[in-house]
Length: 592
Image (tube, rainbow, N blue to C red; front, side, top):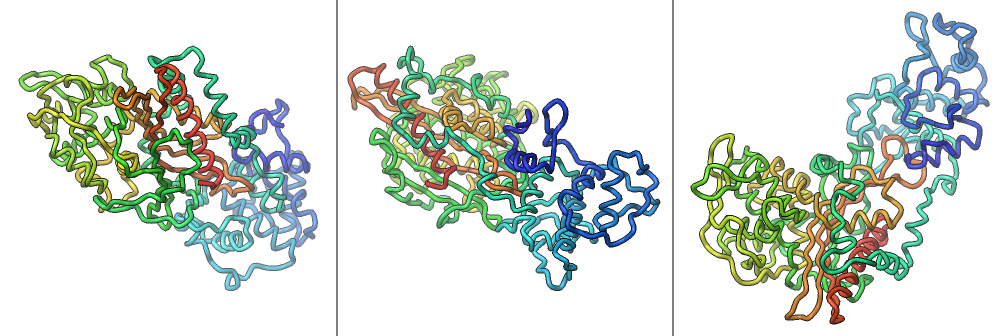
């Protein structure tokens, strides 16, 4: 085992080739999988890969490859077999990095020579336009070789085009992946082992393990609900969340998740009925749940919606607090589309200073109490709209005409008559509506999942499905605030599954709600999240498709009644962590 490949996507390929004596590392035990490869280093592999090829011509004499050069014999060998050529000035440039397309060309020529055939362009279907989004960057001399590489499965013919990045210097790990495909290394040698992922199939053991971590905690502070962003392994990734959500999977060499019978994302106001029964694996103490999994197919966002009593309206506690944040963001952008709401301030009418939207939004999500309590801040944002209009706005987005959203959050608003002010333009964008909110906040798990996906997947939705008026630049502030949620159930799930170190391009935005209902005499916990990340693909992926991207959103509400508030709290906290773990496990293993 090399010291630096354990978490690399091509580690299995690297090990398989090392065991065959085809590649080696460095004296310090490292392999440097992300290090670039030179022309001389790649030429040195040729005698090992194509030993059966006979010499076809006299080796060229290169002025910059003296006999004492460490790779001179291999370069001469490769030149004599037509695998490598030099430049017009009779140089080989052994220390120059070799590009992806040059490697593909050399390997394709080697395959054809080993098989005793010559490539005939007319006989090879040119699938490059279907396979790659940057074919205009492929040099003319290499187009035939790339087409041949696709035809011979040296490069994967996938359903969605992705960048080839033909002129990018190839890395040692990328070369290893190509060589595994070239040599048809058995898949059993290339399947990455995730022992924790397999162990998590024992759901009772997973729950018990998580419940033991609740020792010493109580209803005032819980192990996972109150873990906080500072303990998250992804705490330094918050600023990257919005750009990651904007990008398409192929831009990061990731392949979108394949879905069974996906449907187009619904238009605003269209009530979608999640497939009931699909989440029956969840605990009976999960009262309601909605899960939406997405993929990108032919450039369009496709989804699957799964439910467990997903359309029943319930009190989902503080999880609903992101709804007024979205409403204010959308209405501010309708008033001033170019204004980034993060730079705006909320102030009391008649005052000259206020608090930044960013700080207030984070205060709602993090409960840091630096400015005011989360409840009073959320109540304040509701005051920018009348109860009836905010409720109707929510209904018009999700299509659920039965929801109620006119209640408060148990405290008076931090500012009774707020206004949203842009200090750069010195313009007041929104004023308080002047009506008190009272009544119920009763929405469904479907509603919160729908609203969160409208925010997180904004950049990929058809125009008929986006939140009216809202701009991507303002959503970035919302996303960064939601990324700082104190509840870290997704963090715990990825750690339980043994995947934290392998995750690339993570996005975790969420909002939780927790409380004990005297009316129902039980403790209830709601968690609404949108999650996106990539994991190394199983098998031997080529350098253009190294990872599988997973993108999903879900809302769950758990409840427990034992008569002991602390006992109930510990139970629902551990249960939520366990059920989120199971949802992610099933998503990753294509069992959802």
